Length: 136
Image (cartoon, rainbow, N blue to C red; front, side, top):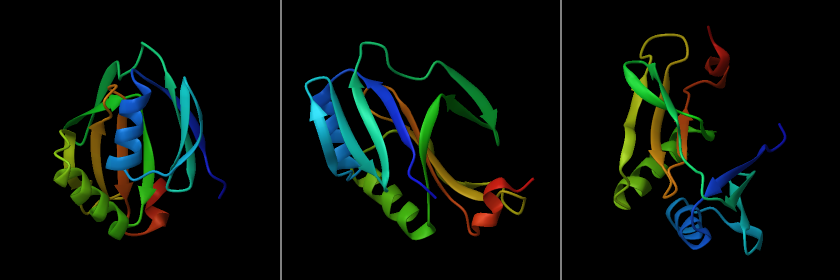
């Protein structure tokens, strides 16, 4: 599978560098005054300076309000648990605390949602079996 690329708005490049670089541990790539590339588990994400950022809607999923839009990565359970602990240690305010949704059903997954400092929603999840990613 090839890496994906996503560009998203942030209010402050320095704050984005701290959050994505230090809190999430994403190595930094190229940058300019108004944007910076990060390596998010092998995927290229680009923070662009913009006054307009943050989710605008929420949909109910498994009795939780899921922010839309959002982006993230499907990790293995070891990396997901390590990230959850890292975020808790950093004092992250979760939109949806780390938990397992759809227990015992098709698509059972560990998930967590949180916002970056500009209000962009991120979701990180893990499946016990990658075949469950698209299970109906």
